Image 1 (tube, rainbow, N blue to C red):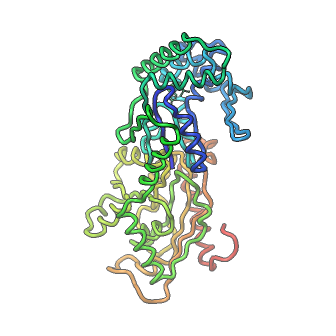
Image 2: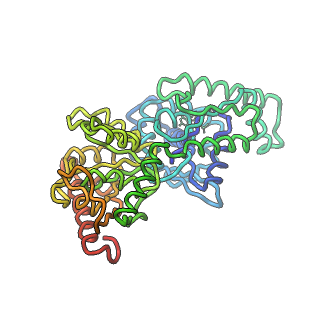
Image 3: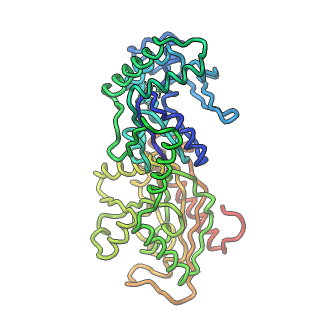
Amino acid sequence: MIITIDGPAGVGKSTVAKMLAKKLNIAYFDTGAMYRAITYAIIKYKIDIENELAVLELLKNNFQYEIKEKNGLKLYFVNGEDVTETIRSNYITEAVSLVSAKAYVRQNLVPIQRKFAEDKDMICEGRDMGTVVFPNAKVKIYLTAKVTVRATRRFNEFVEKNPQNITTLDKHQILLDIQNRDEKDTKRKVSPLRKAKDAYHIDTSKLAAEMVVKKILKIIKKQKRIKFSYRVVSFLSKIFLKTFYKYQVYGKENLIKGAAIITSNHVSFLDPAIITASIDEELHFLAKESLFKVPFFKIIIKALNAHPISGKESNIQTIKKVKDILRSGQKVVLFPEGTRSYDGKVNKLLPGVGFLINLTKCTIIPAYIHGAHEVWERGRKFPKLFGKNKISCTFGKPIRHEEFEKIAKNERIPLILNRIETELKKLETWTENGCKGNLP
Ligand code: DC
């Protein structure tokens, strides 16, 4: 799950994100540090920030950004140099607003930020996390505090670090700096700081960090709750499958955290229910538009977060939706054969699915459903309830998109499809041989 925290300078985002990450035992990602790091590199290599080509060249060829952890502290490296302290210096703070306002800088850093969060539960803090980088995050927090409060907090931090060096001017200067950064962060053209429509607003002016964390934990608990109708369908599916078909799940360890595209073979109308019952998180499905017209069935698929796909080429909205869901760290289920199998065997996969997968660059998890064809083959009105039929669902090893990145673009789609089909067939053979030994 991705949790975004946005807000102005000095509002306590980092403090809260760190505390929250510790409580939830998940990672946190300070994207401000990344903008600071690129600012450092631009200054160090004497690059003119207005020279777009030179900045792009730096980003492409001479900016290796790494985050390491030592004794619970995050260390930031640029091209192997530890810049943890340096990026907090005044000269960086003064320059960073100018750098982070450039569209060509953001366009390059945002994909890296999304990549960092791939396969993970993560708290991401910055200015545009909830609005631009992870617009579909399940929990979005927007922190604010009066500018005078924020200045006092920064001043106190400053006093702690420089006890010999306090003057009243410093406090006033901090207030001016923060006002100046607020102005730049909120008024810039690209990705200005603003509250996402669905973000929870917390005014921290009168709250200690612990209280803010407590409030956010409450919000997470509420948001984590799986939609009621989804829970009902998932619960009933489990009971139904266990009662009538001794249903089993294999390979759950292959279900990575966070975003993934689950590609399942398609043998019956039970398949969405089988997948839902096999994964303990709220999933999204893509379903043929025509299925939304089938009475009763449409209620179930809507409960299961099905999104219509028309089969026409103009599925831009669906592609956008899928991208948004994946970016939020959730999983999408596809049936890449496009239609139910006639003989229960894995069939050829649709090129459109390869196209979609290639666009999203997301990790794929193959899922193989066995036994449901015998229970509810094409032409049957209702599933066979009594008999010796068993149903199982097996998840294969994740297929990472990096595997295909070195391959020429025009060859990629058939290769992706081939890879998924091969994995599904391996799972098919393994299941038909009695699910013995290690998973393929
Ligand atoms: O949070 P911070 O003060 O370390 O951020 C440094 C600068 O980076 C600040 O001027 C705003 C900018 N920033 C941004 O534009 N987008 C983000 N997601 C994070 C920070």
